[in-house]
Length: 438
Image 1: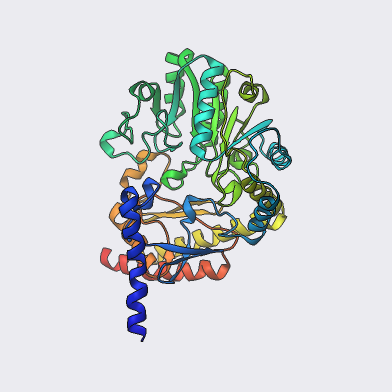
Image 2 (image 1 turned 60 degrees about the vertical axis):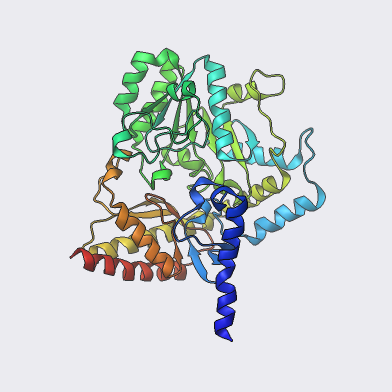
């Protein structure tokens, strides 16, 4: 009986994949979702995701970061359901929940004097750059190699670039407007001198500097405080709009974002991902005088039918309530430390050439030596080993995205037991990798 049962369930993933691939290009709706092994997940709860065959995985991919409290968190789901029981999309006028959420964000995020809501990080960074161009009357922007700010023309370039493309523009899609690409200057992360030089030469043409405070799209590269503070000083001197992209770091590293950790305040901040624990919600926050350009009748157009959707806004209010409890971040950061310390002990034990990186609830293992201060350093990472390690973990029920340089996330639903089980699996896999290496 068991044999036939397995035969029918084993094909369930395959059936879903085949149907998806017939009607969706590649079978997925976002470019980074097709990976090897190509698994189909049909259920998520807390720290776990379950594939179509019912196998449980401890989830550290966490959809690139949204479920900060854990998947399908009961308090969040309940608040969203309550909102949806009495109101859905109205599309005119102000709403009570949205006003409450905007106030909360302004209370917590240092740069936030006013807030606008949209649905995704890409929408938020798009709006931030348009606003910066509008208020400065300039066209060029500065971004940094290794930082990702969404899919639109001005920023979709120079993230995980091949070695031969570093130092030149590396657009990630066909069909991007050449004018948009040309107006984006790409500089090395943590390199203040290169920014200073560009501003001395072209400061009057630059509208914005956009920065992922921690470039989490290449794992975790921590910024030097002098670099971030230097960007703040230079932006003020040259009347450039300083934008911190906290789409990943916002709420994950603190309710004030990573800007509150560093103590440097930008002009504009974008947030998304974990602010609503998996519901689609993004925010553009910042100086009131800038954001007021976006009000109806202002000179910068900002709109969207689903902006500030009641379900997402209610979810975000629930997330803030939970994160305001003193034990929440303490627990999250302790779990992150336990994971990173555990990984460090393992690589030392087996003499593996690797570096543990991360901050707070984010962690990953690079297969290379430190120091790691900018993207260019990561070209030394052993890609084959990095991906092989993660595929071996997936076989053992630990899900880390098997793609070079991708970060891992811990949620408030993970337990010490989950971390320890994951470290046991990592130990077994790294012991095998280490024995090949000797």
